[in-house]
Image (cartoon, rainbow, N blue to C red; front, side, top):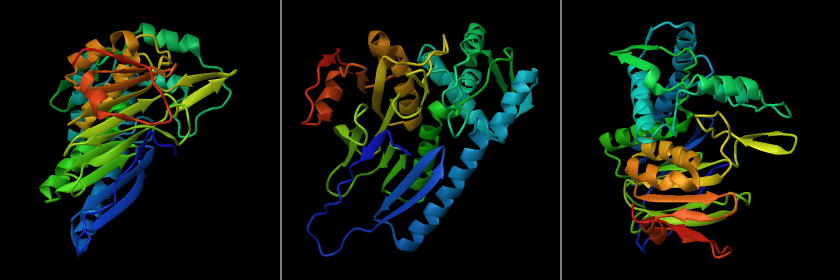
Length: 344
């Protein structure tokens, strides 16, 4: 599977007699590869920690999956029937995050549009090829305006006044899962680690005597790097791009990132990167800013409490703010045009 980001971990250590141990584990959940790297942890403890994280990720994958059998898919089915249903703490946590992110993004991020996402064919592991998008159905769903505002949560009882509401945690689930894993690592005494879910990154501590250095994937050149950035301890870097998961029909590409108000794919922003201390927020914000686009990204970034943002449009123009421009290192192979807004 293609990754949105390429990790450039600096494996050079200061001259010393003994190398700092580093352990890695890779597993496949959330539709992507999740790699966990632990530093300065004894071998037996590292194996135990990685085993626990693997179990946690597998549980979250099953509970939060939007279309395979599990708690969230069962909740979506009951919502369509107009029924209320009791859900677990993990689902309540996700729903409350979803409500919050939709509110602070002015609806540019909306995890209640699962039926629209499914109508496009994105609720499949293998995307359909050559099929005509059901635009009339998508337009009809968008007209019903499914929103997290239609959802009521009373303790663990969830209901909705709108049967077209269908939850999809794909826009922030990886970030939330990595946040939970990061907190668990801290509780278990781990001070330095990287968690990488298909290129979305959570960091803990640093890489020895230097920061973690991460690369932002080139949206137009497969497996190339367009920029890199140094992350401070406990910072996260998330990128949304429309170049990985898309449908093709009659020569047109349709991105998996949808505009909630219309159900139509985003095509003006091809890559949106956010640095923040909270992975779930950075994950959701990257999607919201992609939808907001060049005209409204700055307002939404301020509303979401962001400080570091980098967007790239279909023409290769970079939209950013001074703080992010100062931190990002652009590949020498390109000469980008920058549109720099005021400090966030």
